Length: 241
Ligand SMILES: NC(=O)c1ccc[n+]([C@@H]2O[C@H](COP(=O)([O-])OP(=O)(O)OC[C@H]3O[C@@H](n4cnc5c(N)ncnc54)[C@H](OP(=O)(O)O)[C@@H]3O)[C@@H](O)[C@H]2O)c1
Image 1: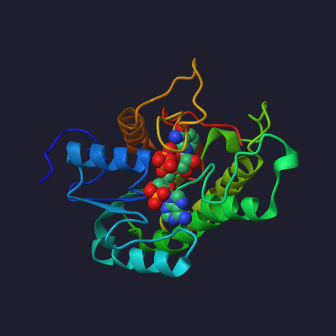
Image 2: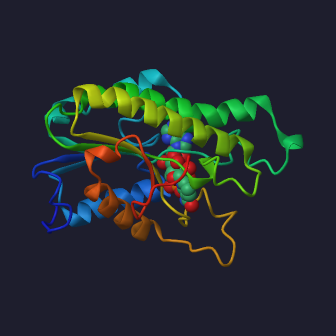
Image 3: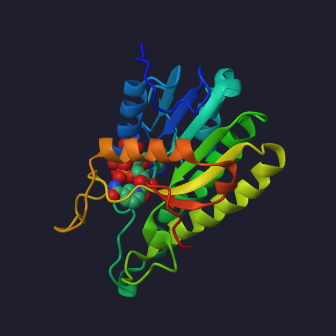
């Protein structure tokens, strides 16, 4: 059973938290932190390898996994989408336009933008209409157009930019029926995971998944409904689009 702590008490008691992408470095860090803190009565985690599995590129599997959340819908207080891909599985972190490949680009968009949009399509209507509830999806600062000074990573960057626009658009629709709900894109910072291991350079401030998870949960706890539709780092600082 979860140990009770004073952390995250802004989320009403007996709440349920759900993490999609629970098998990833950050997803697992979030699950561990949520269970250790015990601020939520139930913590659900889904991934491609969970007993009820989903693939974010397969809408039917998203629908199926979201149906598992139905019994908890009234208590749902926090949903985090921690899925995503940079390279591998048909995606590339391109250094130059010479490496652009239509199939690889489409795959990056399918996982990083279209998949989370379909997840929002099925999850956001389940959120409570009267209570505070947070939906966060993991984006990346490199998806910021204004912050792009280095170039490279065409597909990853552009798919995260698309994700940011989808989050913003969904947040506007969500506000109409759920004024207390918050829907945001979050840059976790550089975190030591499978996704980043080939790219973390000396000098970069690399966080452990546990540190990133703790910072993210603290930040999400403090977001107000006015923040919905925004793009934030783990300290709650807005990131330029
Ligand atoms: N690590 C960083 O420094 C960093 C920086 C900025 C943004 N981010 C973002 O943070 C998020 C999490 O990344 P991470 O660092 O934790 O990477 P990770 O350890 O590689 O985890 C990625 C997660 O995404 C899941 N996933 C990938 N393709 C999927 C699919 N088709 N269907 C369902 N799940 C799928 C993986 O599932 P499997 O275990 O089944 O592969 C895994 O759970 C990503 O959106 C990433 O872009 C990370």
